[in-house]
Amino acid sequence: MRRVKSFFGGIYPDDSKKSTAEAPIEILAAPPTLVVPLLQHAGAEATPVVAKGDEVLKGQLLGQANGAVSAPVHSPVSGTVVAIEPRAHACGSSVTSIVIENNGEDKWVEKNSHHDPVQLDAATIRQRIADAGIVGMGGGGFPTALKLNPPNNIVIDYLIINGCECEPYLTADHRLMVEYSEEIILGAKLMAKASGARKIIIAVEDNKPDALEALRRHAGAIEVISLPTKYPEGGEKQLIQAVTGREVPSGGLPFQAGAIVQNVATAWAVTKAVRDGEPSISRVVTVTGKTIKEPKNFLVPLGTPIEYLVEAAGGFNGTVGKVVVGGPMMGGAQFDLSAPVCKTVSGVLAFIEEESITPPVLPCIKCARCVDVCPANLLPLRLEAYGMNKMWDEAQRYGALDCIECGCCSYICPSKRPLLQYIRLAKREIVAKQKKPS
Ligand code: SF4
Ligand code: SF4
Image 1 (cartoon, rainbow, N blue to C red):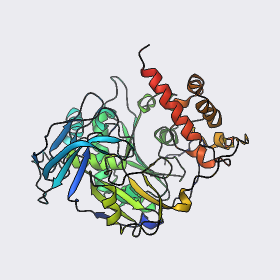
Image 2 (image 1 turned 90 degrees about the vertical axis):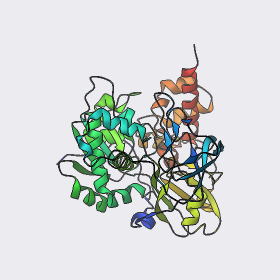
Image 3 (image 1 turned 180 degrees about the vertical axis):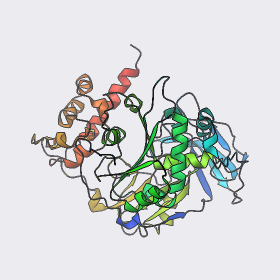
Image 4 (image 1 turned 135 degrees about the vertical axis):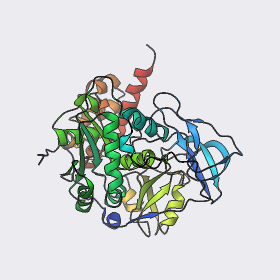
């Protein structure tokens, strides 16, 4: 049995998962109108290949990948393209989107399925994953096929399938592991073949014993390990450290430690694409929080407006203070609930007013608690000061780009300082400066 070490730092927030941890996934019927953003991934926006007035089939290509780091998008329903225009996006800005009126006929394009996909060669599996528009569904949104194709001569020792779901409230991955464990195992095998990984390890936090059991039932030679419940256990670098004892170098990528990390929802999507011939047009989303009447886990067509999802969960119960997309630690507050679910949206959380009040910011008391919890071994108090004072070079020297934006420092700070806010600002400025021609 593998000896699992934990990563440095981290916190232990109340996981608040009870209300949906045992709620089976409900398949949500598509709404009358869907909004498909051309940007649902890291990299360049997809280029539309349909026009207003076109009739489209379910699974049909709507936008093709634009360049090396990009991903195509497909239609989640059959219907008519009624607009191609900027629409609200869960990231907070507006993004060019293809608006489809659902004809309710659920007519598919021809599917290129394969009854024994593990027999396919690595390049074919990667091509199918790329063509299906699969990106990291844990939130990163990086195109999966690219991640499975590390530079020449790099040996991948470990493919780690991330089933930690360490953010409080979220149970979408948990339910997927319980109910679709076979698809996750097959997806893991396909990704191992596609990347040449020597060993597959599925890592799940120990607060999900039913998920561990379901996966082990189908795992065969794949190792399924239980990790201590601690936030941010699911962070890519933290997970590699906990599972393999290896460290990804500062500023480096996981393959430099001989590892690739993929989320369980991505593994599920890979099976749908390579075995069933279905592109990435749906995902599981948790809808929960104190002001949601009936918290649920839904399997949702991508492009479904968040407000439609809230209604399907019984609507709001009382006054809403804040709606967040994603988890409470790393998710983003929403100002327009017409924004659609896209590939990286794992949760919709509605908080009451008392939970949404920003407490007064007090002076730093130099307690170093932010340093103790930082999983990236940074000095958050110092980075905050550099961010506040626009000292970008100093922020870079002190490793701002290694910040994984987990929010542990802001969470633990007794003075309620907006540490992450200023570190994010510093990161943005450093990256912008690096991109400027010298
Ligand atoms: S500095 Fe970044 S990595 Fe460190 S605790 Fe804060 S948010 Fe997390
Ligand atoms: S936790 Fe807050 S108060 Fe303590 S050192 Fe860090 S910034 Fe200062």
